[in-house]
Amino acid sequence: MRKILSFLVLLAFVASCATPHVVSVIGPNDSRLNCNELDNEIAIASKFKRDAKAEKSYGTATNVGALLFWLPGLVATQMNANEAIRAADDRINHLSRLKTKKNCP
Image (cartoon, rainbow, N blue to C red):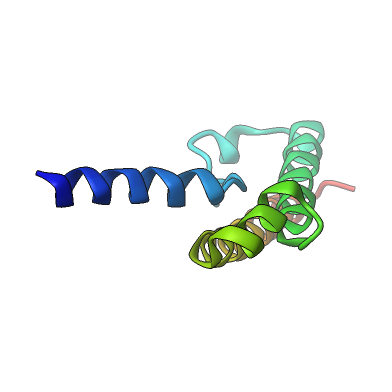
């Protein structure tokens, strides 16, 4: 019982350190979006990418705390940030291809 409780606490701590949001690459309504909506979605994905890059900085409070007290939390945050950046890039590329298909300016 004690091992299970320790594992759950450890899991919760790791999950709390990995904060950047990973976006879905393909949305269910992407093909129905008009040019302005595609631009808005690209801007949203770009914001998620900027936020994830900011989380990779070692100057954030979460990362400083993880660096000082719990290194695996820092690694989890870095891995999650890399995944979030990659997903945002893929989403931006997907939406840009849709814009090209629709002959958007």
